[in-house]
Image (cartoon, rainbow over all chains, first blue to last red; front, side, top):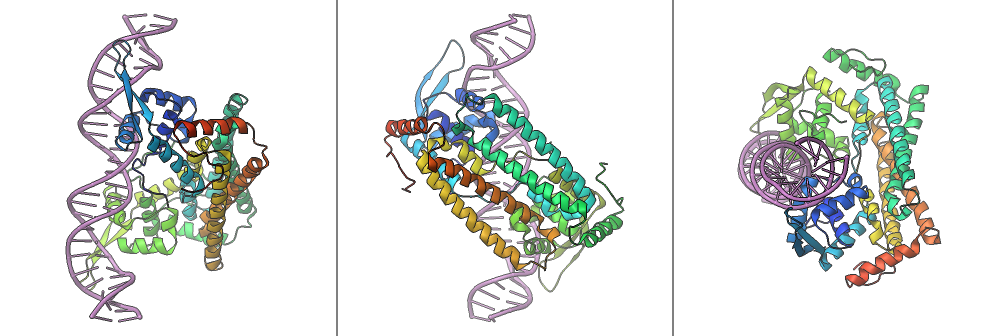
Length: 213
Length: 213
DNA sequence: GGGGTCATGTAATAGGTTACATGATTCT
DNA sequence: AGAATCATGTAACCTATTACATGACCCC
């Protein structure tokens, strides 16, 4: 079970990971995270950053080294990570890696209610999803190729993993589509009857394909 | 892009899916959802249900048919789905199925910061995760075997999908572990040096394996 | 001179979960 | 007799995001 942490927001972990390199001010943390594409992995809302930083300080995971000011710009507060902060970071990452968490992807929710769509409509939507997945995959590959050689693989593990999962999802959809399209899927009649009943009761059109309203 | 809905909580969708069968009162919705294992797919907090039901009513997706009372028990309000409610439900499911959403599994976050753990420690934690995944998979299989034959496959799609993804995750981890253990993974020296530097700077023990504190 | 980006922070809001409050009925 | 489950609902709370507010500096 994931333990309750003094600072629960994953953005807090991201902050710790930047400041462990060397002390820096909040804005620089954002830039570092953005530059490394972490704003996509975790998702960074700049507005939240200052709140999270304050929370980390309150929890004793970071503290103020100094404040400096360049010209008449706003004063910048430089934070460094504390020993407790490093320990928290390591412990947190260990937990994230070692303990599978029950994830609830939206797609799973969709599938669990897919029965309300007829088989033909579902098939059409799955084809759309497949196309979208392939596009996302291609875009990601282009991006990764961009920093191939420059960034060590060590820092691209999440991408490798995500691609593997995306491929598995696509493969599952393809296999399922084949079943649907060939008519091998069981209980198709029962399924169609169910959908038709709902459609009748609420005066909806009986859809054959996946036409959008 | 996922559209903003009047009732955004997925529990709202679950409620619509029960009430589309026939009118019922909130407590019965919970039982139905639980009985079908939907409390795990989506995750139901009974406390939230009454709020969500009220929101659905305010949005015009369900309305009150009647209230009845058995003995001196609390009065039960029976809700039915409206035509707008059915339309909303179908539209929502369509979206969930057709549009891939950027998901942020915890494991991905862990991987994206895994560099702060050394290769040996990471390997050990991944072995732990693998074991946990296998156990979860086995438990799920036992459960699904339980209602094999009784429940049509149509209502087990989420499980099939989830299993496929879990297997893919396990496969990826195994492949990565092999690389780590055989020493084929690139930049191992750089990696170890990085970790050692942090350990030195903050007076942490240099870990070789994945020993827990 | 104007747009971008550097740089910080607060207050309001939204969203959902938890805790609390209540009590009847049914099963063991 | 006591536990479990039926059955509802409200209020407090927590947490995170958004909107707002401010202004300097730099490049074209």
